[in-house]
Image (cartoon, rainbow over all chains, first blue to last red; front, side, top):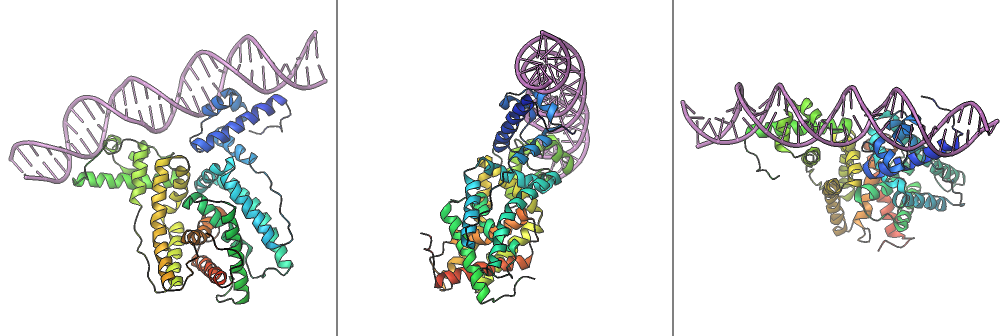
Amino acid sequence: MKRAPATDPRVIRSRASVLAAALELMSEKGIAGTTIEAVAARSGIAKTTIYRQWDNQQALALDAFATLLNTAPTPDTGTLRGDLLELIRGLAQALTASPAAALMPALIDAAERNPTFAAVHHQEAARRHKAASTALTRAVHRGELSPDADPADVIDLLAGPIFYRRYVSRGEVDETFADLVVDHVLTGLHARARHPHSAPRR
Amino acid sequence: MKRAPATDPRVIRSRASVLAAALELMSEKGIAGTTIEAVAARSGIAKTTIYRQWDNQQALALDAFATLLNTAPTPDTGTLRGDLLELIRGLAQALTASPAAALMPALIDAAERNPTFAAVHHQEAARRHKAASTALTRAVHRGELSPDADPADVIDLLAGPIFYRRYVSRGEVDETFADLVVDHVLTGLHARARHPHSAPRR
DNA sequence: AGCTTACGCTACGCAGACGTAGCGAATGTG
DNA sequence: CACATTCGCTACGTCTGCGTAGCGTAAGCT
């Protein structure tokens, strides 16, 4: 069901209310647990009105996730460490203080068995990785980082511990930890560039 | 509803069938999407029989997760690197080849908003961390590792990238990557032990 | 002001899942 | 072999959510 971009202020208002309520409810009850009826009740928008704009619960959920794709600016502090600190601190911040934090595991879970959600998740991850990738490429050009280091590997080494601590270890994910991760990975990279005691990947 | 340990072979058989079917379905449809009726159909066990042994869907789900708590032996290869390689390769293996892999994000998601699932998840994580912690302590005693390194931090640095690549980046999580992570973290730890250019945590 | 469009509301019918009761058949147990 | 349990099955009544139809009202547009 295709719809025009929506210019009517009434549509814009109701859409915003519905999406906000949907995000709230998905944080609280999960994706599957969020029903159209509950969204209607929470948002104060009539159920029929919701069905006029979305075909079903999944379409609404996907649309809601799409609104979260806020573009964080790519940092450019002049040094790799500065860039990475900013990125990883931002990630830590997003996973703890932002309302989207509770949505992340829901999205990951949904992506595991639903291709449509997988696409959204992939897009979301790509958006975040792009900034990091840019910073890494810049560092290589500056001679600050060996070109042998695979950006994808470095990103996993950096973001992984943040995610893991937040959702698995369930420890404190503060700026101190973010800094520790960045510095640890950087020292690892530099040491390995000087004395590579295992063959570089590929 | 308390039940005796169950000695009747009929009970044991039906329980096993039900739990196996429940795990299958949870992998496919998620936790919330797994209904008692579907479990009954999949397992071939009558719905009424299921209700005779579990009070509701959540009780069954929790019980099913509990059966996955298989105790992997703590490795003791003589070197820290050997132990960690074994542990992290095992983790990578579990997250790719095992049927439990699809359940992990479901459990994490459920844990995010349900204390009972959070407890199961916590227990599961603690079980895995214990082995790593033992290996790290042993390495400290051998003088192979600085006592300044917080085991919790090291565990996050090691396991994080594996999880992240499996569930977020969605790249190849093979033995090569597991080895890369271990070696990277180890070189980082050693370099930082020699020239600590940022204060150790705590 | 007059036309158009979206909204709210009520009222449905439908489907799926819940959880229980009762009974005969099958399966263990001593 | 007799007794005790458990199981499978059928049959419910209930509830919740889905998705739609129809109608009057309110809001926006020109």
